[in-house]
Every structure is written in C-alpha cells, then in structure tokens.
Length: 281
Ligand code: AMP
Image 1 (cartoon, helix red, strand yellow):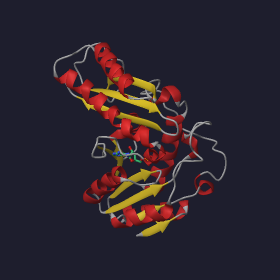
Image 2 (cartoon, protein in one colour):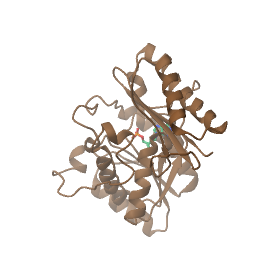
Image 3 (tube, rainbow, N blue to C red):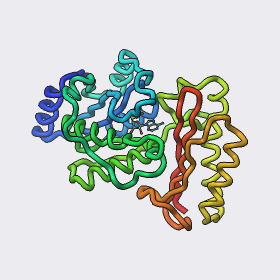
Image 4 (cartoon, rainbow, N blue to C red):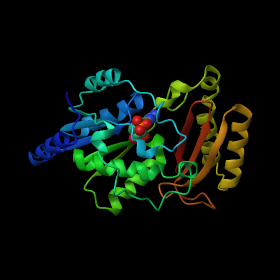
C-alpha cells in the first residue's frame, strides 16, 4: 500500500491511473476506523481496479464548540486496518496541505438542509462538500463510497455530484452495527459504561417506528410521538432531534406513502450519537 501525504502527488497519481484506463473507488473518512469504514472499503475493493482511502479530520465541518480537538485519532492503528483491506493508496494529508491559505472560495448547500443535523450544526454540510470537492479533484474517483449511517450527508453529496456534474457514481452502503444494534461510530469510545448500555435503545426506537409503518400507520406525527416516548423512557441522553422526513429529499411528510427516513440524534456527556432507519411503505 502506498501512503501519500502530498496533495500534488495524490492528484498526479490519480490522473495517471485514470489515463491508464483504471477505475478508482474512493472512501473518504476521518479515521479511527471501524467495521463501518471497512464495509465501504470492501465494497470499493470489489467494484474498482484501484481503491483510495483518505483520512482527514476536516476542521471546516466542525463548529466552534464541537469535538475537533478531541476527535479520536490513531494513525498507526488505521494504517494496519487499511493495509489489511487491500487498499492501494492511503491519502493522509495534513491541514496545511489541504488548506495552505484560508479558503477564498467555498461551496454552499441550499437543499436537504434546515433539518436533522443542519439544525444544530450550522455550516457543517458546507464544510463537508467543500472538503469533498477538493478530495474528489485530488483522487479522481469513478465511484465514491458513503455510509447510510450519515444519511443526510450522503443525500447532500448526491446533490453535489448531480447539480455540479461530477463524473462520479455515489454508492450508499448500509449501516454496520454492533451485535446489540448500536451503529458503529468512531465517537462510541466516548460513551460512559452506562451510556453505552442504554445506547442500544436508539436503534430499538427506530425499529419501533419502522414496525408501525409496516403495520400500516401513515401518520408521521403518531410515529414520531411513539418513538419519542419510547426514547424518553429508556435513555438519559438529550434528544437533539427525532424527525421523520422523505428520503433522500428530506422534505416534511404529511402522509407516509413514499420512502421515508426516521432519524435521531442524542447528545451524551462526551459523544453525540446519530442513527436512522430508511423505510419504504
Ligand atoms: P467518518 O470517518 O465518520 O467521517 O465516516 C466516513 C464514512 O464512513 C462516511 O461515509 C460514513 O457514513 C461511513 N460510516 C461511518 N460509520 C458507519 C457505519 N456504522 N456503517 C456504515 N458506514 C459508516
């Protein structure tokens, strides 16, 4: 596996590989890798000649009071994981490589925001699509892989490549979970023992909502109320949001007759957890 830290070398390599007719699968991450990231790498490995993974904790997508400084990092451990997954190139730029000057041009999002994570993380998705635009130009992917755990993120990235005609296929990969249902996340290490025990109720609450839809409930308010009641009875964390919206458009729904997402965010003492379930009635 080749490790590249320089922006110029990364772009030169990627352009060379594409000129040789190779397909490139790209997996962008912020590191502290777990089975969710590995699922993306494995799918990319199956579908492309070359796999490029990146690890970059992007300051642009963190708010002032968020966890940029204490976001977990372990390069040596991550390198071993990526190597084992037969990734061809690991791109590991540092902040001065990615942002040598303060950015004079950034990207903006106007759809699929104003809901879910954008409510309490203003500017987050702007930071995400700005860094992804740079990373896409640097790695020249044929396909890029994203987890449905961050369902709003992949919905926004889908818009980015559609609206701005990036020649990239966006692949959405199902959420990988712990055996008890908790969605894998780099931030799970910051849960206390008690929080970890009760965190299983996030997915259980979402499954309760899913079951109501399967049973024929079409009123989103009834479902949100039931799921919220369940959550309040079973968790001590603060519910940041619990919403039911169309997916991937993320519009309000009056009657459930199309694909919807039930999404939740819970703030614990040191970790904010998000999870969702996508249901087609
Ligand atoms: P992150 O390192 O948290 O920025 O995540 C990098 C990529 O991995 C994103 O596309 C995430 O959606 C995806 N990802 C994170 N956790 C999971 C998971 N539990 N299952 C599937 N994909 C995930």
